[in-house]
Image (tube, rainbow, N blue to C red; front, side, top):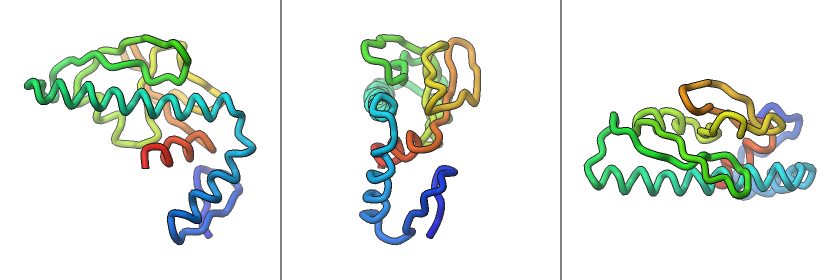
Length: 137
């Protein structure tokens, strides 16, 4: 048995199916709003990956500035964050990190790990981390 995300719930290190079952069982305790926010953030990240891929196919290099969608989970957020492809990829070298506009962080499920010009880098923790890792999986 191994621990994940600093929780006291033990998870089998065997087949992925067992991990998913344990994760879903624990998510029953997670506030539905926070779970929705975590899932929405993975949707915005997927959209940003499409934007990045299209720009790279159009000739954008790692130092090219691109407008990405704010990856907060708020419904109706249309915020845009400008950063380089390299900076964006650096943030997402960890699956549980996202870029959000100032004031769009959700301290109940994520902590600010970097403050950059015009945006924040947030890191999920606890069950929200499990959700984004499963959704990204």
